[in-house]
Length: 168
Image (cartoon, rainbow, N blue to C red; front, side, top):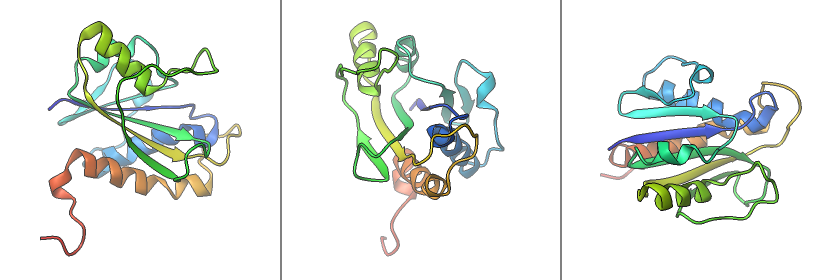
């Protein structure tokens, strides 16, 4: 099963870069040291999972997604969803955006399906951002949500290894 975890956002705008922190924690949880994901325009393969961090999603990634069986998108949100850490199973579908530079994961999946006839299983894990100033440090509130996001991703990656206490 080829898996890609793709985080996106601006690490110099505080909580907008939370995906970078989540990817680093997932790597650490899988036994890898911190990897500089800024120096690569292509995914970094670590064992069974590949990682990519970018400023934003672009149409060219549809070719990349066609190479994977499952994809996890990680991003910040500004409170547009009720949960501080939101987990969503995605389906391909074009979505309108008021921003010309903004491409949603669903739209990217739709492009992948249309052009490459591939539809990887996909999820979105979005983390609430509270501060978007000029800093590479997360706000205290968003930093406290990173572990929850990492746990959701690991449960998705390895569902049989993450049982709740009391499960047999």
